[in-house]
Amino acid sequence: MEFALSELNRYTAKMGFSTDVELLVDASSFDMSRFFMADAKYDDAFEINIKNGTGYIKGTNERAVLIGVYHYLKKQGCRFLKPGKNGEYIPEKDFPTDVTETVYAKVRHRGTTNMDSWSTDVGVTSVTDYIDWLPKMGMNSFFIELEDYYDGIQMAYLGKKGINFPREDYLSGHEKTLEALKKRHILYHNAGHGWTIRMMEGIDKISFEPSDKTPLNPEILAKTDGKRQIFRQKPIWTNLCYSQENIRRDMAKMVLEYSKNHPETDFIHVWLADYFGNFCQCEECKKKRPSDWYVMLLNEIDSLFTKNGSDKKIVFLIYFELAYPPLFERINNPDRFVMMFAPYGRDFEKSWRDFTPKEYEPRLENNFSHDYMNMELYLSQLSEWKRIFKGDSFAFDYVFYSQAYFEHLCHVDFAKVPYLDCKDIKDYSLNGKIECGVTRALTPTSLTFHLMFNELFYGNTDFDKLYKDYFETAYGENERVSKLLERLSALLPSEFIRKKKATLTKAEKDDLTKAKALIGSFTEYAASLEPENSFRRENYEIFCKFLNTVTFYLSAIEEKANGANDEEIKKLMAEYKLLLSALEELTPNHISSNAIYTRISL
Image 1 (cartoon, rainbow, N blue to C red):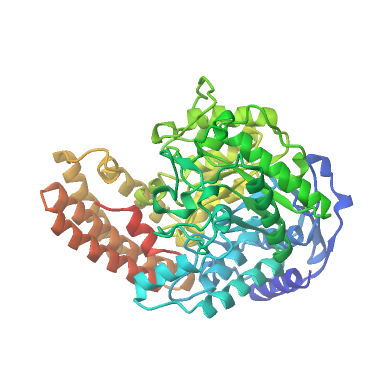
Image 2 (cartoon, rainbow, N blue to C red; image 1 turned 90 degrees about the vertical axis):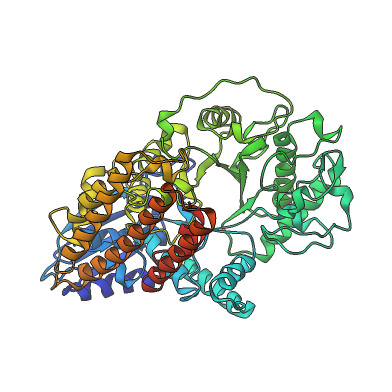
């Protein structure tokens, strides 16, 4: 509670007034029946009763109180547009606005992953600033995939700097990350893929990188293409032979040991190997679906945890083959588990509501292919899973990982889809959403984050009102930037960018010329805007730098459409990456040049 009070005092002092506010936790004051499988540790609600700067903020837990503090500040006119101090708008006020309000979170699970949250220049600061931003946005969860993600940071650092990232710096940074989570009582999700690697003797590196190593115990590996082998040279893509009872038993012991060694983890994710088409095809494994063997493993884990007096929550993943529900087995203790629905490969041009569940003929063996990665099938599978599992659940979607998010350069034409998915999430009997993706994907705007996060916490978000508030706060009135992005978006050859077509029509080439001219006139005009407002002035400067990268990219599109060869395009894209890197240097918390570069190509 000390941190929440310090935040309240810090921001009110910046605004120019003080308060006398009591902060307290009292879950009994709230109607907990409004939550599914209510638990005050996980479910957030707050009550604010402050008049003339005096009163109280009460919550179901300390995190809810903190979110309530930020809600009170937002009612005073504060806006937290992006992580970090330069993402905050703090107005000056002579006296506070009265606030009397009770708010219940729409859903329990509200968060994102840590993918690419490390900046190679500001190190752990980009992560802790992002964590600091989460409760300001009503979020309550942060998921660090894999127990140890040093290798991913090391690769990024080598790619950008050409030098090693010291492991001791990583360990120090990870401790600071955990401290930032604990200070704000953010729910910590950890692990995920990698359990299968832990079972492989002689392979101790948990990463997504290929390996030429063969485990010392190959008999535990899934049989694929008639052999027990590392699947496509990637240990993290390699499943085990789960029909072997000793493998399930040993994995359960491993999860329990992990839980004992990581008491700071609120939700342990126990996933199998990544990818698809990699489940064991031995005669015994073929007698059941992969999800049957998975449920048997989960029940083994639950039994062991129960015997050891642990109430730790376990998250299990349904995607690819595991999206087909088990035919024979059922989870014995639903209270232990949280089901995570991950519709990988879905089309982000349409929201969930635009898909109709597709009927299919269930088979014993359901090997996945790219053709099956569509929401029509996924929604049907989810419905089947929900019929046999009545416990807690959430969606694990890929908005900030998807090609679509980055290919829609302006974001305004993309934001409506994930907003609608969050709006509809409870219609699918899901208790929230955790987004997999790039946490530094906030340039040119963080609009998509705001729409999604606001809807997940408050519900009933007015899209147009929030849209208007966001751009007015960041850039002032008259819809200068929003209208520019809307016009620019309409001129972009989206089908060409998304590689749905290989050529441009004359009209599309003319539109590219218009788009570049539009950017040129705006950047010249923007130089004189908001001269007295340092917050907006900085936003305009960064925005215009972003527009310069767009201009270059549009020129590269023209070159390709006019017949430039692969080598010429490669050189142009290398220059494009340099421009993005320069922009990242300017605002490292808000853009990942590598993420954009790898997802937008020609």
